[in-house]
Length: 327
Figure 1 (cartoon, rainbow, N blue to C red):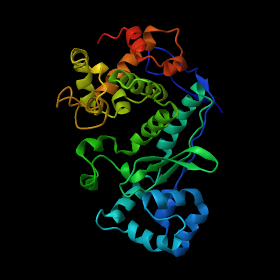
Figure 2: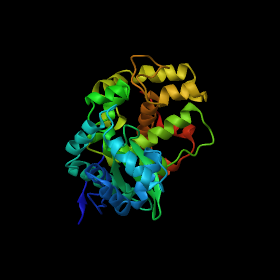
Figure 3: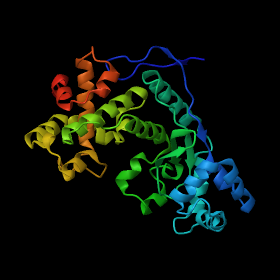
Figure 4: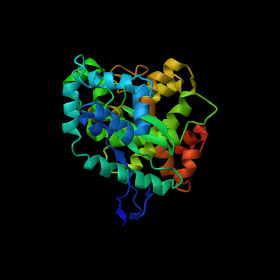
């Protein structure tokens, strides 16, 4: 069967109307774990999920994988924890993720596009699990694959979920929704498969690198609003668009593009309530936002450059100059 795909939001078109689809395997370890009632069920988890059960035991629960006796004692207590109301959390997981067809469809389409652009890249296998509010996304190596990913679905129960008030900051809740899983998964995958390779660590190189990933992410999710891909609210995106010229002028005037100091990079690139180097009214990660805008300008201004060539271009200064970026 062939997958019919629409064009991307960029001015350039990267996909033919028909491309060969791929399917992302989603393993429902979360459902199996939450259905475990007794020792027999827990031991069955070791049989059905030998690799992930070991990973889960050591990385999430902090229990030696070989210590099954201790696991049999601790796991029921962990799932019934009253401090964070895990019984309620786990029930919400069951309800929220009883039907994952929309998530499956979005992931299949995104990785079909990635496979078309980069046929050498593997398609990851995803394992859904409950993390105890410990992790959203993790990579782990199984004997037969090196790109397996695990999704802590209890970190995607909805921005308004009451128990998140105890474990995260308000600004983090925006992307803690089920519909954010596909973009989060693909973003983490792309950052892993297309690593930062510049021998310079200035803000400019980091902005362009992250902007490239965002540009590519927008291509593989052509129907997703830009603000969702960025992890912004609609109001944050509108602020960034409205103030883009002033933000860029401030970055240039302060000569921040050439700085390598950690506080500067953190302010412009890391998540937070705002971009401190600009304003407490500014949305976070404005360096990534500007890097995306520069990337988009570069690709629209240089039609002879392929997407793959652009992603491999190590010279951020060249990208900036040839983008003719003028917000």
